[in-house]
Length: 121
Picture 1 (tube, one colour):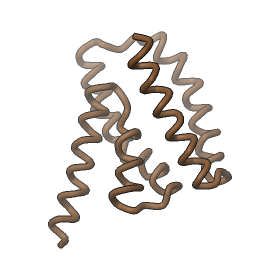
Picture 2 (tube, rainbow, N blue to C red; picture 1 turned 30 degrees about the horizontal axis):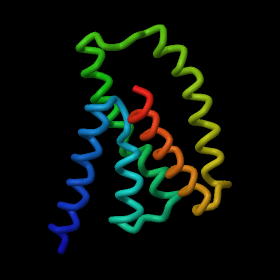
Picture 3 (cartoon, helix red, strand yellow; picture 1 turned 90 degrees about the horizontal axis):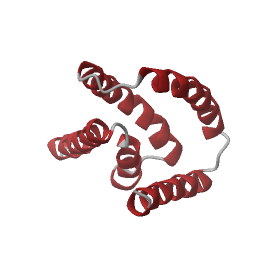
């Protein structure tokens, strides 16, 4: 039973890591639903845990992108400033947001992002 559980966790991790590395982000769109629906994690904990999971994946991906000279540094630094602020605000709001609303907001964001990618490219 432990082997099956570890295999499920590892498979979710591999798929999340591949999405993060391939798309430059997107790991959260895989790992959050996976933790909620497959691992039965509580919604708030899944979102918070996703950040901790994605951090090392992002560091590895960023290293590869920097090494390949794919980074637009002026754009990166400007967006990073807003991202740090937004990350702080979002983390503070997570505790105040009911799980049902959080789930609906996350799902709506995923649908809008998918529609944008499919229809407006």
